Image (tube, rainbow, N blue to C red; front, side, top):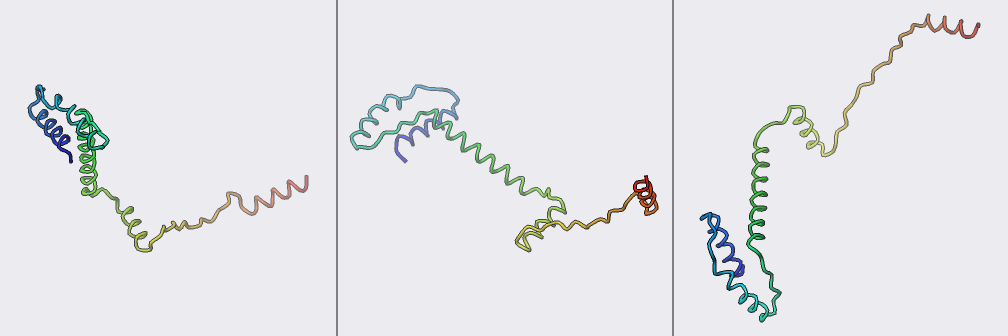
Length: 124
């Protein structure tokens, strides 16, 4: 980590702790750091304090999301049926299809009704 980034991060932390903005001399020295970087033939990349703050916020958000996920995993909210499905799949190593029993289709009409219908249909 470069000295400049280290100083900027320290400034950000101090700013957050104090809560008040103060005049800083780091802004005056920023030009000299850029000149030194050009002399060394490095591509100078200048980070603003706001960019660094936004990076810190995104890291905090990611860590909060990870904590929420870990807490959700620690709570047991799985149904017994779902747990059995998971165990079955883990045991066999593949997806297990449900076996649906075939239901015999029963007719509303009796054989006598069919005979009457045949007689009426074919005889008329």
